[in-house]
Figure: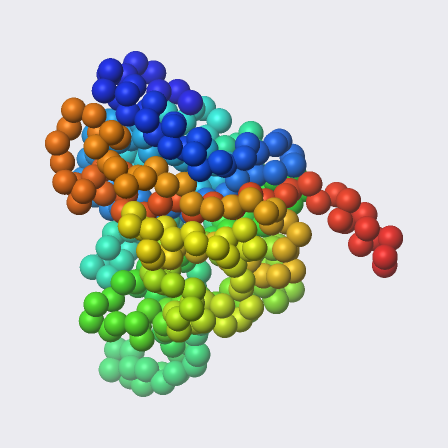
Length: 325
């Protein structure tokens, strides 16, 4: 970590967050053997400038992992670039464009990763919703065009990576929280995402069929219709995340998810969970600064990072498959 010259208060805050990180028992990754992958909604990241202390804390939290999908990143990337500076020269980022209408909230999705452990392999694209041929009006004339049957407010963003012997595609999304449409509009978006990922995995020339889906899906629990929607085409929660791993600060909602198809179960270790940097108390993370809990969520976040450890040493598995064949 490259925190550089910092204030006494920032040093105190970093000591506190390091203590909370240790209590999360995140195992260290091992080069070409394991990587730690996380998803984190950083609230309105880039909308307003954060305190420099907050950016140091965000960098320290991200630095516990090898690849982090960041949702709710806004159009202004200046704070993210400062975080990358603190992380150090080996860290890099791949990010999506932003939508300029109100529905898109000017949000991006980014993958921040440590190049010593993870390599970006070239694919980076927003997911196109499923289209069907419809008769529509264009310049006063009725014509047949392929148009989206349902749209996402914010397009999911995918990128391809390699670590060790393991190639995979990460697909991250921030599903709408729609107070006007309620759960039904969210359910449609989740079903669309599940259908899109399932169809993509069956394509002959997809760059890799090992797909990991993650992000903020605004699903409160794993036993409701919203969760059934995202798992409707076969996506499953890794074994290590099937316990109580709620990701809001109150630890009573499972908004964020990491999902996979069962065919890559062997790549998921028994390690996973939530990094609870909040721990019921935010004042020690902001020494000498008076603020409300709401203000704190705009300095760090109202979400906690959800993480899993992947086994990327798949050479023996590949050799076994050859011998069986």
